[in-house]
Image (cartoon, rainbow, N blue to C red; front, side):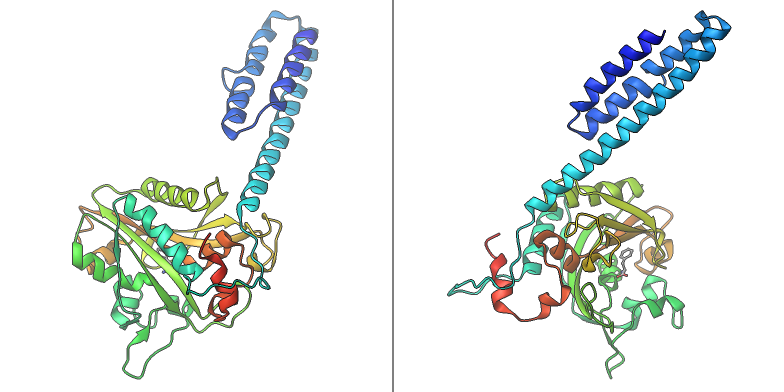
Length: 342
Ligand code: PHE
């Protein structure tokens, strides 16, 4: 038995060294540690041994199992690091001192990213919508299940106009209009500048861009939401970006989530752009609350849907390696014009 265990381990080490993808790694894990894997087989063979033999071999097999597990996690860490090096290498170097002599105007990086993402959603059957930046209290809050005096309003420090109207604090303010416009089924994305009275730093601005997306039909579930988010992110970054989903509270979705991506500026180590956490909140999302569907004149008994609010400004920072969010509104033409040809 000792020899068999040793051979099995040597064999495993040979294989784990040549793993180059997460798929291969998972296959290798199943081959060795799966229910019908090689280690379980060894366990099943134990009954052939004497009592003393069983005890020794049992201990050895346990050691073997931990050694395999240890090697698999080291290999997984290595794969993540390699993937990040590749992603970071793909992020163009943004150089504030780079003077680009161009006689013609150029697109703002947010316009570029907005068009890229719109194209991705258009190819998945979404329509592209537009709506004014000045909205009313009903659309921005009440139709989203945030009544007057609801504490959720505190999260969005709002600029009110003397007319009683307000500057859109989020693109969700357009959900009700789109639901009434199309009814179910619908797939739509709508981007806009949004405004909140926030103090600014490297990762906060009082004026930023979001892209909202909603999909409503019979039988839409969280799996649809995750599928569309993953497809969009891998198309934008052209590589596997590490994401994490955390529970998040928004009165207009239930359940609600925060989708974070690993910071591509520091590779997850922590920097001012990600406030040192290695993660960047990119896309809050969730399943549309039945009340919100009702406000939009869509029957929640028959229909369900998801909504997401993608931070276009943050997405541009990640895509183009821009470290400070304030650059976007800086009107620095030299800095902003270098992205046109990317
Ligand atoms: N509108 C929310 C915000 O800006 C984000 C969001 C959109 C959350 C869609 C869930 C669903 O804070």
